[in-house]
Image (cartoon, rainbow, N blue to C red; front, side, top):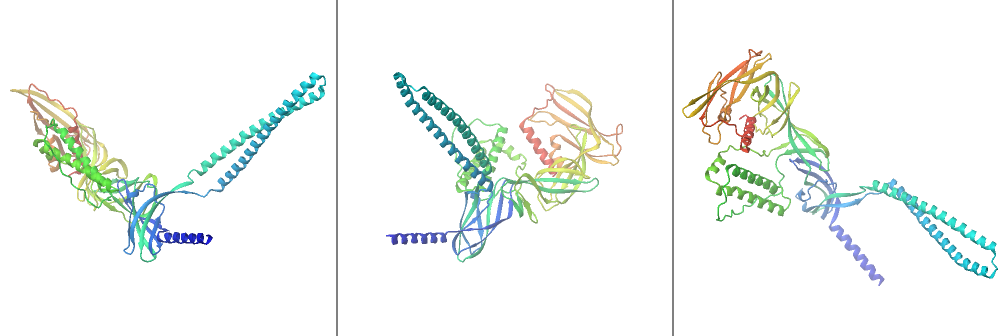
Length: 605
């Protein structure tokens, strides 16, 4: 029987050895080699090296970051290595206790021994008290019997009574001492345990590992590339614009402000910045049928509501597109695909239900891009980015861009005159929209924004106000006449520019006249001017038809009042004499039109 047990034990050991050989776990060395940093995620690639046996094995890559997305892991390897699977796992690991913790444990053990000794002494005191109770129960009846017989020994009774009281007093004092000692020991134990809890907080840590299941026909060294997405990392474009008086170039420092709190450092990595969305799905979305039915038509929506509804569906479609490309699992991809179809059905439903006139207005609206381009910048050299709370900055490029400088005056809004530049993106990079810090002759002059600008595209930016110039606007005259059933109002305006500097300054001078809206029967006529309007093609196409007036003038040096530069113009309004001209209250359509105008002005073409 004993021999049979021995055979079973040997067979079990052999089986365990065979099983461990088949699925041998190998600890691998890895180093972060490259990082592609997206707007709110990062794709990290590690170079993994290890010695593996022939056949199937498990390669364990440790120190995975806290913000890793477990479903995003994938591995690439050489042709002679077959990667069967890769998975992410976490496990708790207890750290070795330190000497200080060992000393605390020893102190606690000694105090617990003292506490047990104290409890034993209190039991002994209780036993002595019980003995005195029994002794008293025996002597009291005996003394009573002797007293009744007249043979009581008073001296003996007195001795016994004194002995009983003395013993009880000693027991009370000893019990009080033991209770005080017990309380003191208990407090010391609690204090040491709290101290130990403080020292051991975090002694059990969570280890994050990637386990690669691979197969290799021969034993030897293997090299893999382990890639995964991490959260809590991203970047935003930011610029420094530097210019000098009298120069025809602007130095554009194109930087990336990086936030990196992924939980792992990236030392000396190849860094790529991208505005694309990380794509995990290799397959494109599927188109669902466009289901329709006949029924009672709903109450027709007003044009602004139709536009708002279309914008909402377009946003939903864009969000679903991003979710579909980055879906970590098939179930998520299917849900995102379905939401894309729902949003597209909403847009197509507007085509079917909305009147043709509203659809034409939607199509005629000049589109303004709301999403950036998908661009990628591979930065030269190696860059280190630590995982930390504060933001870090890396430079993408620093080209000098050809520029045309001028001043802008809008006296209807402000008396100050600002410097601006029209900058040509002559670099080989597409510029993303982002904040800019502007410097003129090395001085900080304010903040601006750089719009999206493709290669060869122009954009406008500011370089602060010119403290040596002022602008003003005044209404010189207003007359009103009646022509049949119409009323005619005539206005005479003056715009004044002052230049206290030593050089003549080119200024784009802006003002405006009323713009009729909503089909109002109002005729606006621009009359005599002391200088014709600007002939800039972009201005004439985008702003002139909206009642914006612009003159390109040159203000001579030392032109202060009363010799300031003056420009005068006339305009008239003609409308039904029973009506009055009233400014419209703010509407969402007005604000949206103004925002579109601002974006197009920044583009400069």
